[in-house]
Image (tube, rainbow, N blue to C red):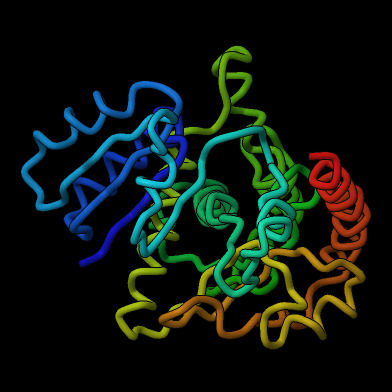
Length: 286
């Protein structure tokens, strides 16, 4: 029996993510939680001909506790942007760095997609494996095209556009969506896709497969991460993570990078340090 709990299921990310989960036939049970609409969404999803039983819970009558009960995987899409989840878990005495992941898979997906576009769009984006390190906001996002597999061979102008541009580029690609939606929304369906990709990676790892995925983690709490954190000067950072049956088993160093990427890394670390401080201060105030 495999149960997924999805918090924020009535939101613009949670709803398409719940559809992906139900249609995948990878779960026996899916519980949806939000402040509104989840019973109706569950009823709707239960008309799909896959085996998962979907239940919808609201805040009343202990709905959150019921939604989380016996869950194997919990996905949180609700709340304010870039919320300090780790700080909340620390306060509750439930923080396990090997089992908490900030999903940066969207940046990885974008890195592969945009380099395919830069090369003319005739190459399957999934054929590229581009590591993306750092954070998940603007200049903190650093795609390492120098480490791409296969090697990326384009001119420096096109490469810079794939990294920086808003039409589109990995660091500011989200701005393109905001502009296209005329300020009425941000990345939702592509984020749901990326989030579900990470969920599938967790399921594969639980089944015994050797899996690595980029994720934003508390480095000192993961084997191999303390050394990376000491070198970079930040504790929270996205790197490739080896996943096992019970969570993260190792943080993998990203190795040598290009001179230009090293400069971008310095900018990313400066901005990320501010983001981390803001998150910790927000957590301390609650």
